[in-house]
Amino acid sequence: MIFRYRALRMIRSITVLVFGTVMLFSCKTDIKEVNAIEAARAGLPNMSGENMELFYSDSARLKYRVTTPLYNKYDEENKKYDEFPKGIHAELYEKDGTMVGAITSKYAKKLEDEMLWELRDEVVVINSEGKKLETELLYWDMKKEIVYSDRYTRLTSEENIIEGNNGFKSDQSLRKPVFNKVTGVIVEKQQP
Image (cartoon, rainbow, N blue to C red; front, side):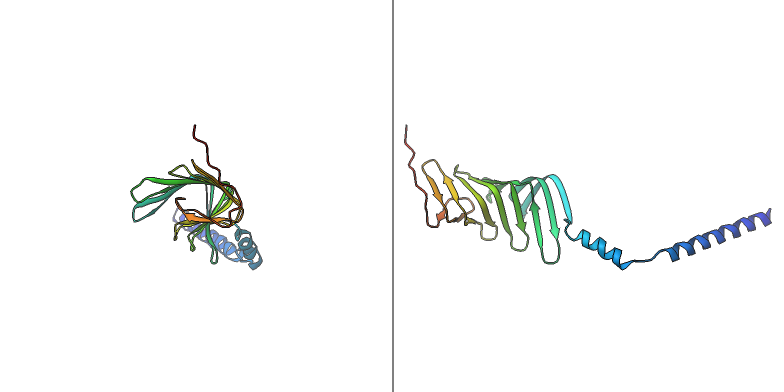
């Protein structure tokens, strides 16, 4: 019985040793395969999510809320940005928690280091006063709290419609818009 136990133990030890040796020598790193995997990974996001709701705050104060069907985060050495390839709906808030306005677009990109949003394709901004801004390209500088564009823009309010082809600049709540080379018409709406 002792002989069998020692024999079984020796067979197990030899089996483990042989198996371990085979595994050790069968593992090799092919640098071409590693480089191919790295190259394939280069264009992919570091993080991705569907039907996301993102909250951005400063000192525990909600600044804006973003909902999106698709969110991608890229965090590479020279490019750090969030991409929203299927668009966004964002709501902006004042310090007291009241909503300043909302922005929607069919595509958006937020550059992390610059704190700059690029919104494209059917961009619509509506502020708390009901002013509605429409354009195909809008930049939102979060540091300076301004929005601007160099494309055709239409601003509709209760009193006026302003159209311009050479862009505009405004505070992010659209209270003080300035149009460059207005080419549109200001139309006074008739009172009933």
